[in-house]
Image (cartoon, rainbow over all chains, first blue to last red; front, side, top):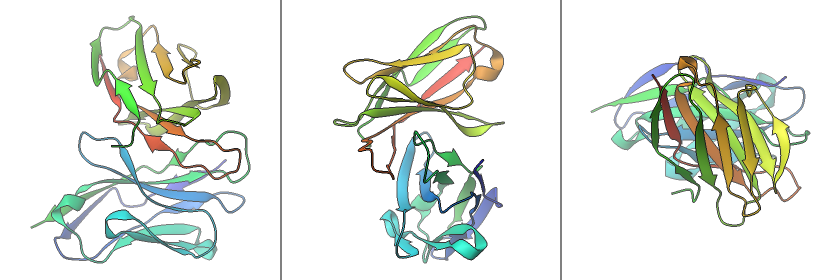
Length: 115
Length: 115
């Protein structure tokens, strides 16, 4: 069965500093990978996704993520954090070969931005 | 705004009761998914429907059921409610072209509180 691990439960970063959120997955084949963001009281918004091809993926709000097969990782990065980036971030994986399309989510990383 | 709507936004009820959560997918999307977000279990896939038929099942309790109607809206029915059912319930929708991968767009969620 597939699984996703986000090792960091909380991260505090200063406004303007860089941010990297870690995501490791376990899956027998190359999965489809996603990052979602959940702002307080909001639903989940898709930041970016990786299906195949270029391992560096650009998303919305200045985020990017890099797929590293050898490390089973899909880390999310942003060069310069804004106060509005304070939210909870979820990495998710979908099976590449299966009926249905269910997402398996990591436990999430809550990001706090210091002024 | 993802285009997925969920009603109600908040629901407070008592143990043993039954509630119905409603979801309208994005225009054109044929597939609907239900997820539960709780503090102890995180974000978990419950069930998926595609064009009115059940497509995949996750960790959905027998007390819970869902259906998708001809107009493609979906309802999640939760019965014999327990305190532990208190959670945020998300609906997501996707096009499901039949060619994986597929991207899911999430609604704002329904917060259920069982007292």
